[in-house]
Every structure is written in C-alpha cells, then in structure tokens.
Image (cartoon, rainbow, N blue to C red; front, side, top):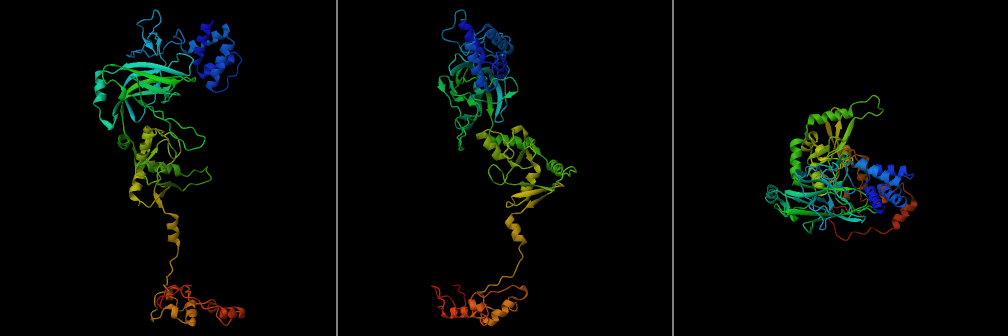
Length: 491
C-alpha cells in the first residue's frame, strides 16, 4: 500500500490544473485556487484518504494524459532523437545496459509530449541537438538535479570553433540551452524554473541574473533567454554532460539544446530595412481611412497629431518604425528599439504597450519623408484628411508670430536736434506723451524715466500734501559711478 501511495502522489505532481480540479471535484473538495494550492490540496487528499477509489481515479486521470506510460516515472522522449542519456552509477537489477533519462530507465515505446519553442529574432536555429525533454523530479525534495548528455558531430564542432566573434568571448555560432514550460498547446516562451543552476561538464555556467527594480513592492524579474553553454563544451565528438538544478514547486519544465547563429541589432535592422518598408502611398491611404468622415459619429476628426520625438529615448526619430497591428500612427526609432531588445528582450510597443514581435515591425515610408523634409526644430506634425500633413510649431513660436510689431524707441540715443531725452523739458515730454514727438508714425507712448512723481502728475493740479512731502524729501542720490551726462540713470 505504501508503494501505491507514493506512486499516486507522484502522479498528482504531474497533473495539470484541469486534472487536479477533476480529481478534487470527484472527491467533494474545492477546486478553486492557483495550481500550487490545488497540488497541495490533492496531495493532502491522497495522504489522508488513501482509498482504492481515490487511487483508481488518480491512475485513470494520469493514464488519460499519458496513455502509453506504464508507470508514473516513465520518461517521455521524442522518438527518432539520436541522443544518449546518462545512467545511474548503481542501476537496478535487470536494467543494466538500458538507456536512461535523468537517471530513470527509459521505455523505448514511450512517446513524448510535443513541445514547441517560440522562435527568437536574435537566434537562428541551425540544428536541434536535443529536442524538448521534460525535467522529471526524482523525489519529493524541493531542489532537483536533472541530467542529460549530447554529442556534437565533427562538422558541428568545426562550425562552432571557426565562427567569428561578435565580441571577445562570444561567438556568432553557439550551442544554447533553452528551458520552457511543458505544454503541447501552442508555442512556449523561454521560462526559467526557480533556483536554476546549470552545470556543463562539471563547470557551472553563467545564467542571466535578475533585472533590478526601482519601484517599491515590485520583485526583480529574470530575463528568460537561452543560456550560452558554448565556452564549457568539448568542441569535439566527445560526450557533453549538462546538469540542471531546478526548484520543484509544482510546475513542469522541459529543456532543449540547439545549435544557433546569433544576430546583432545591426543585422536585424538590415533585415528590417530590406524586407519590411511600407510605402508612403500606403501610409497616406491609412491616414485617409482613419480620418474619413463617419456620419454615425458625433465628433468629426479633421487631423491627427503625431510626434517626431521617439518615446523611448526622447530624441528625434531617426528611422520611424511601428507595428502593423497597432491602431496608432505614432512611430518610434527602429534602431533604439532593436538595441534595447538586444539587451533586455521585451518586444513591447513603447506607444501602446502591446506585443511588438520583430516579424510585425515595419518602417513608415511617409514618416521617413517627413523627417527628411522638416527642420530638426519641428517636433510635431499633423496629418490631414486628404493624407497631407503640416508642421506644428512650438507654442512660443506661435505666440511670437501673433504678437504685433511696435517701433522701439531707445531713450539713450540722442535726438536729431542733438539733445538726449534726459535733458528735454517737461513741456516737451508732455507733448511727446500726447503723441506729437514720440516717433512719428508709430503712435506709441513714450515714458520719460527722469520725471519725478509730481512732474508726472502735472505739478499744479496735484494734492498739496504730496507737494509738501515732495519738497521735504531729500534729493535723490546718485549711483556709485559717474555716468556720462547723456545717459539716463534709473534710481
């Protein structure tokens, strides 16, 4: 009975969410919650109620998912893969010389769940050295070690050895290890298990670390990308052994080994410029479609403003690029976008935050023409209903252009008669304030800064108290420096 209990518990660990919910519902338990909660609930159910009916349900659910597997530890390896797996140092009785996967005897007739990994823009797969193979837990411990081996052919080893270096220590042809969830539905993105460590031929290789997060309460995220294991390989026909240490927390993972060619952002930009450029005429048609009058709409759109500043780096766009599936016309800089994804692959549109895969990027031909025709000071344009466009000036430039021009009078320049405004009489200044001598045709008002307050008020018509105060007040002091007599000094 103890052996059946252990077998049932290990079967439960390999269940999907739907299998766990079916098992819990059949036994009258709650089927809500995350997968980790469902796994824990199902394991406690098996431990506490180890009835023949429960064991039968567990076995039926497991065999419905793996119909040709004779035991819960049966390895699921694709047929036709010429890869030898490592064996245990002490093999069970009667299995000497058998093929092993992760230390477990492999059944030759056992098929594998077909897992497809997503294609990566910076990696071109040349050959598959190891098809996706599931990491299988050996026991109930949280940390597990799974091991596999593969061999390079002589041509493959020469191809890696003779490839050029993109930078010191990084070859253009690499052997990479990829890890993803074990799921045969759709394509799977690279996903690292918790507490991952990779050892190649008894040497630990570098696994990308976590991105630091400056936001409070946000956990740092690890960039899930292929692990370059090339520097630690035997570049010969010798056997290479890879050991993956991973955290067993209910999720299932598969590993694959590929021979790839690594591209740079400059090479990807060359492909984009050669294969994916949208003509200016097609861009104008899209603008006209967006601005076409809709009789059912209460608001008529007569124009769309688009910035010529890249939202990524806040600089003027060099090569305008956007995603063909996005609804907006705003572009971003293609070179900066590819460089950022080369260092931190997110492939997200910086305008609308939707997915922006490389195969959906396109260069906007109309925006390219606009950037060439406009001055660098123009930061924004507006598309019109007929597909044309016009530049949008800065607010300051617009205010400056709308300000009326008035003649400017320099009060420090001597008049035509040889006298400066500082030495003109009060009556003359009053007349000029009326518009007789201010500058002729301009009609502007001239203020003499040399007049005192009582002189500005006319003197005779002023208040008597003001007159007395002005008489008692001391004479204004001169500045620290002796200015020329023709200059006006403002106290």
